[in-house]
Length: 137
Image 1 (cartoon, rainbow, N blue to C red):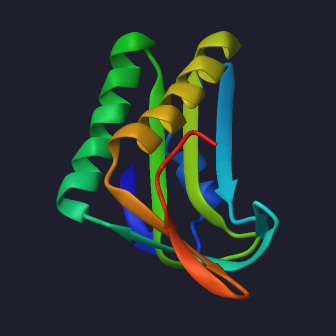
Image 2: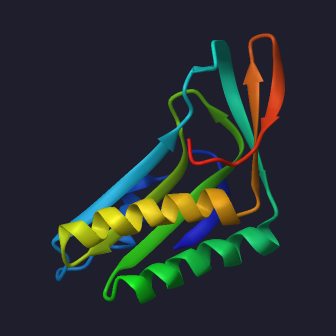
Image 3: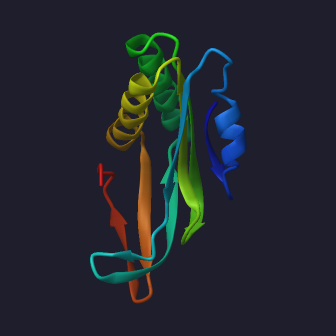
């Protein structure tokens, strides 16, 4: 499961996509909209993506995880459009047979998403807005 969607992400569905009775570890990461950035009040975020490139890039991350951590499964869903404060803009689920690989693969997925996937974020403040580059923070 790799995709983009408007509206809230169903976290349970993303988690189910990596479920496996052989797994001893499943991690679900939710990146959520916070109400502030650098001392400014954030009202909401707006995301844009280039689906024809973004979805294959998400799938490639999943493939890399499967190659680096044999037996691992990954699912990533990123929101597009408006994302209110406290709602998830991205959900990453990873399942592996053992805990250490799960933590490593989950972190890898997030860092690669930020570095490789063509998704753009606009922070909408109480007093204006600004486009933000994808970074690991």
